Image 1: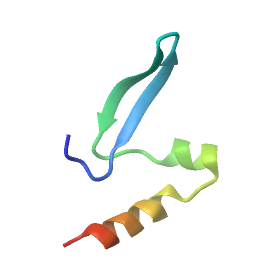
Image 2: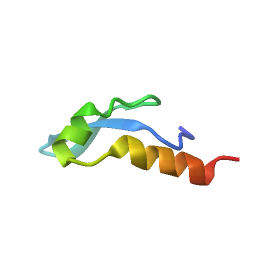
Image 3: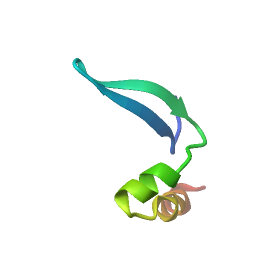
Length: 52
């Protein structure tokens, strides 16, 4: 898809993980609360390092 940052919704199945959808503008609330990590800060650092 050519995206530097994306949200990927996945579901565990008997066949292994399945990709449900890919979002170019991911919501971060769920992953941040589940991991206790500041994902938005990490994305900003990534963009700063790779911009230009």
